[in-house]
Length: 131
Image (cartoon, rainbow, N blue to C red; front, top):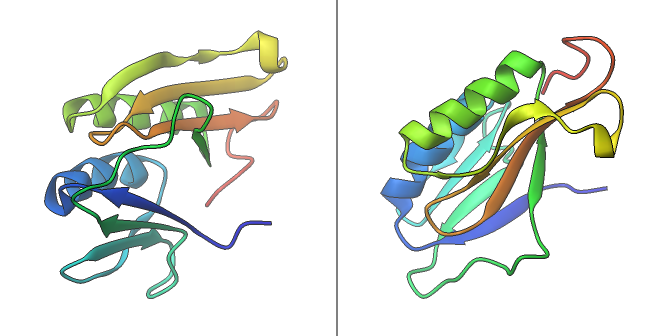
C-alpha cells in the first residue's frame, strides 16, 4: 500500500545518526542524501523512509506511530538498543506482545523529534521477513 513515508526533522545530522543506527539494525541503509534530506531503503535512490529538514516541525500526536518490519527478534532488540545509544527514548522494551498475537515481538522508541517508531516481527519463525 505505501510507497514511502517522510518525516520532518529539526536537525538532519542528529536524526541521521539516530536513523543510521536503528535502520541499520533492521538491514536498511542510506540510499541518498543532500543538504535537506536523507533517504533510507535497500536500493540506491529508492527511499522507503525519507527524513526532510524542517526546523519548525513537530511530530504527529499520540495516535500515530510507524511500525517497521524486523527480520528477526534479535534485529528488533538491536534496533531498540541502537536507538537508545543514538539519542532515542524508550517507548517499550523488546519482547512478546501477546495482546497483539502469539508471535508478535516488538520494540518501541521515540526518535529525537518525538516520532514514535516500532520494530516488529510477527511470525512463528525467525528470518521470515527480510527488508
